[in-house]
Structure formats: structure tokens, C-alpha cells
Length: 68
Image (cartoon, rainbow, N blue to C red; front, side, top):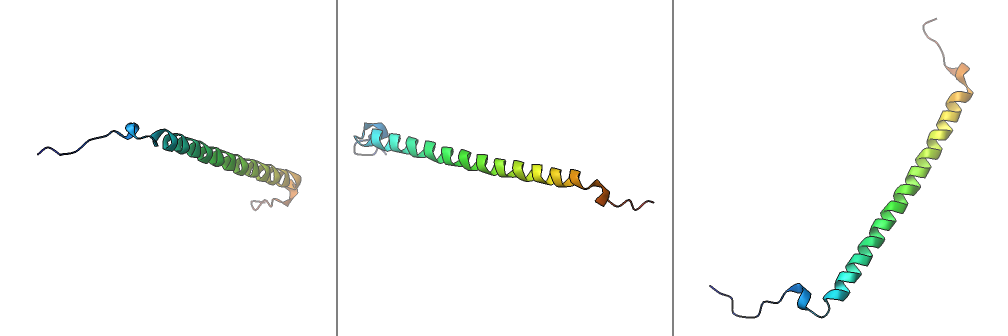
């Protein structure tokens, strides 16, 4: 059975370029926000790792040797 009516492609609608550009810009903004959040978390983890390393190196005498 053939469909009666007109088949139009998505690109043929007048509003398509606006919807496409808006979607592209919003997606780029979404990816940018995720990247910035990831950078913030990575910086926090780096600072925490450095803090823990400093604490570990400051008090080596606090480590108890149970074998003695």
C-alpha cells in the first residue's frame, strides 16, 4: 500500500535551521559544563592527594612496626 500524501524531509521545514542550531549550541554548552565540572573535581582530588601525601611524609615515626 502506498501512502497518500506528501512526504517531506525534516530539512525542508522552514524552522529546521533554527532548531538544528539551537540544539547544536545547547549540546556544546552541555559538554562545556561537563568538562568544567570534571576539571573542578580533578583539581579537588589533586589537592586532596597532595594534602594526604604531605601528612604521610610528616610523621613517619607514627607508623608502628608490629614485627619488633
